[in-house]
Length: 253
Image (tube, rainbow, N blue to C red):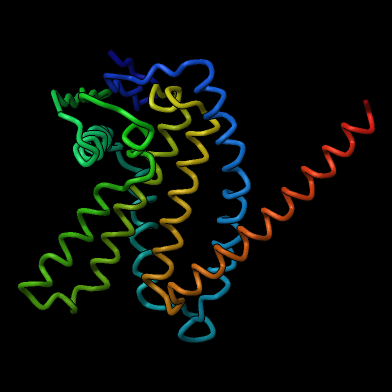
């Protein structure tokens, strides 16, 4: 069972995947290949931010302000009040279970304690294992709740308040994810640090890009274009470096 480390414990994810040496090497190589994509999505994210057109010379769009206000409020609460660790552990284990169920796994048990948790499933893969680090469960619930209520009620007047709630919940996900990744996590060891961190970063960066599209005048087509352009550009750089590296090795023979 997990032991506490600095306020957030490791998580006992039962039915852990035991990778063979060849599979560990494959995951490491895939992780290397994902690094250029991490660079590309970072460049696309920055370009996307530059595409935001303020409503005035000194003001961001109101939805963006609401989202950032919610994020700022959460950061204030996170660093000044006792941290709701158990709420994070609950979300962590439920996310394992949710993605396991979506992928056809049977859920045998879920345990949530003050400083650790566990979930027991009939199957496992890297998506189920890493899901809590890139899938903000409380944010998804906030989004689903808003649009679910909109079917029966006029909720437009609460749109900015809802975006503030989204900012709070996403801040919750971000801060606790970073805190958890700074500690020993069996989830990460299962598939290798390089592969796991690359997947987690890619998914979270893409999530931020989608939030920017959602709360600003930037179109989804712009995001897709930027992702394509920067992916092609970084792929060209990697190819050129690979060719030069091979040439150097051949000369050394």
